[in-house]
Image (cartoon, rainbow, N blue to C red; front, side, top):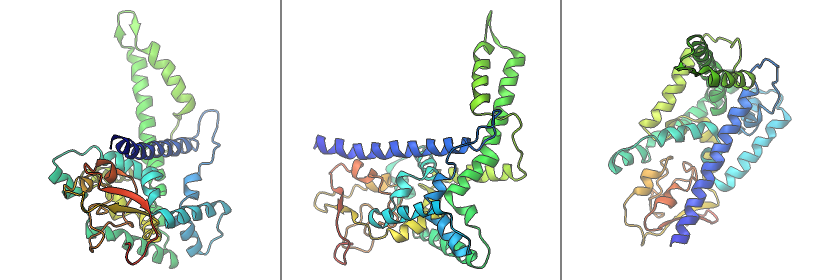
Length: 321
């Protein structure tokens, strides 16, 4: 039993490590687009967009020429057909930020169940996807405002980074002018070398100002704050990319299996599920596990005290939902 628990927790920690690496990679590639004093701006800054099949679909529907690199996103679709909506749980940096905010919530099991359980409103994201695709066909391309990578990039570029940049300059200027310290030990002996490193690799001297930066920043913070109300609110209710991946991955070969005899109906797995995927649903009922919603995060399997849940490979069929 202990050996099995270590294996399960290993999958959870593997997923967390990959999520963290992808988030840090996105931040790194974002910073490569900033203007530094030595004008170093190289790097594959479009990498995550090239993995995004929603971008490929939008360009195709708009009748524009498709960049060759965007065909990488077909790999995302192909893997999603076989393994479900894994991209949202393992790769997407915007999803990782929402997951981190969700983890800040506490409360009783009852309150966590209320926030985590499946809701029919999760179908809204499919309506968002249909509306965006219909708009693209008529020449109104709003996908760039709802695509998670575009939204995250725009929020960082127009609100978060300019605010951090200006705040950092103001802080270090205050430290330099005030030169606080204790006796002969001055804080500038530490702050100035740190400031020089930041100026060389991170901060910019004259950051661009964006008219809508404050509004976009408020929207970005608001979206993250909604995770304190419902688990991964954006991913479950709004995200068009998640809707697309959920549609193509609704019958994956990697499936959640439940041992009905071992289950004691504690519903701890439901409270741990960030996707509202009904991990406790019996396979012979209409409220069964919902693979189109599942992020394949392994949380449900890891927290089950009775070892009643497991992910297994199986061919989808009428008798194997």
